[in-house]
Length: 119
Image (cartoon, rainbow, N blue to C red; front, side, top):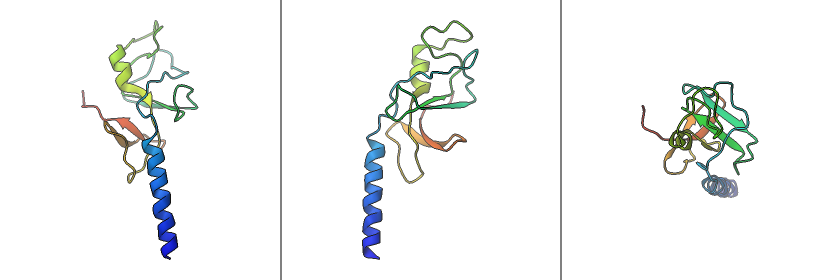
């Protein structure tokens, strides 16, 4: 019983170290942008993102097209893109996200999301 507990503790430590070493918050641009851009009320999660070591690019709370060549629909500022489009990773309630991020359920699971003030 003691060795099982030690293994569980070791596994949890390894997973926590792996999660905190991920570059959550790094910039990314999704490969697929809907016509007219994104809707702020929705969260978009792109898997397999080449921009992210985590392979997960999140768009959360952004209206418009985050690409620099935006010419169709709403074109958000660079600050808006930086704050609302970034690399993320899966999280659990007992595993903390890095400073400035919170673990949120986005419908497809829980992921680290930038902790921004409302508005």
